[in-house]
Length: 64
Image (cartoon, rainbow, N blue to C red; front, side, top):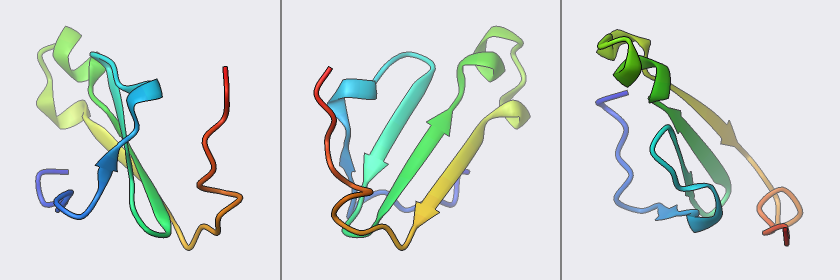
């Protein structure tokens, strides 16, 4: 996870929180989960899921 280059990504404010952070690129989303790692003091438990090759529908913002 430390090797992820998020410079060209924008944060997704609707899901920004202490435990989860999402980043939006031109055709991808990256979800970073660190809540359990912080609670358990186990940095190795941090995870990132990368959704690549998304179109405009996959990157649309949903109203809540």
